[in-house]
Amino acid sequence: MTTSNMSRREKQQHTRSSLLKAAGKVFCRSGLEGASVDQVAQAAGYTKGAFYANFKSKEELFLVMLDERFARELERIDAALAGSGEPHTEARAAAADFIHFAGDEDWPRLYFQFVAHAARDDEFRQELATRQQAMREKLAETFARWKQGVDQDGHPPLPMEEVAAMICCMADGFLVDRMIEPGLSDELYEKMVDVFLRGLEALGSEAAIRTPFGRRPADSG
Image (cartoon, rainbow, N blue to C red):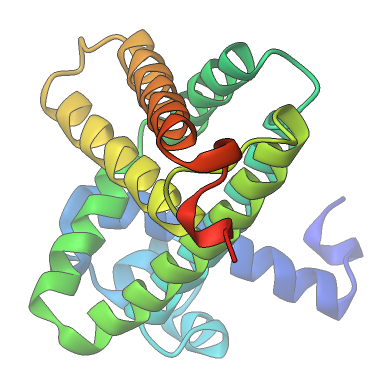
């Protein structure tokens, strides 16, 4: 469909999508501070006016990019952790899928440039932190559902919010190191997740042994 055949709403959506796609390329090349609204608009084939009709600033545009990316990632993780297979196999497959999804050419470089910007701009940092926290909360819900699906009688040895935070820290660390050393194998992250999961299982087993009837202290009453 050409733009001449689009409705007004479809044209607006097309303009917005084009600006987001162009911004990713421009920000990766020039960084947030180095890139201008003019550069983003020109790269998308629009005017500065078209940019400001959709976004009030470069920061807002990135936060929209982040929201859309996180939403897609949560959908993918929720589907990957269906709880229908062997837990370790399913977890490693989900880890491999994450690296394939998150490790595209532009996203890691783009994401960590904005993390660096957040370290220098407190208002932007708070916006980014809010989204990170919301992402971890939803991940914790997904992990809790998956845990119940694969081990209905088990109790997590740590709060799922902490498990989600640890998984995110491992993922961020791996993606940073792979930007520095592109030769790092994707299988390394799969192994990290597998070792982490086995460690959680060991903690859970130890807690069950130490408490009467296999119950955690918090469950007794």
